[in-house]
Length: 105
Image 1: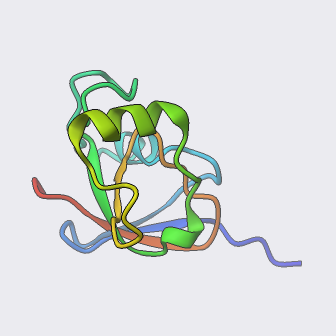
Image 2: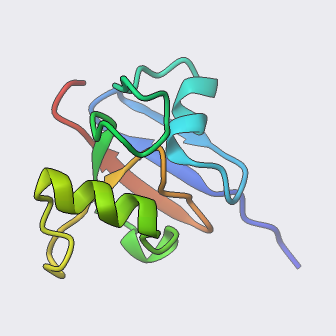
């Protein structure tokens, strides 16, 4: 059986990175020296690490209660099936590939 290492594509940075399954996107970006905004250091408070999952939303973890509370406070439209905004500090890449972008790269 072939093991597939999850991969994150960052077209704005012209990079792709491999990450351990279950690692938060925030942790993976920091580990690869890719800047990610945050004032709460990944505690699901500030929302500055918001990213858009352009492709592969089915390959990430479901939204958890901490992220729901933050998203509601910040008025992210997480109830809209077209919403692809997630908090990098909360979302985990579980399998395959995703493509992300943000407004500050």
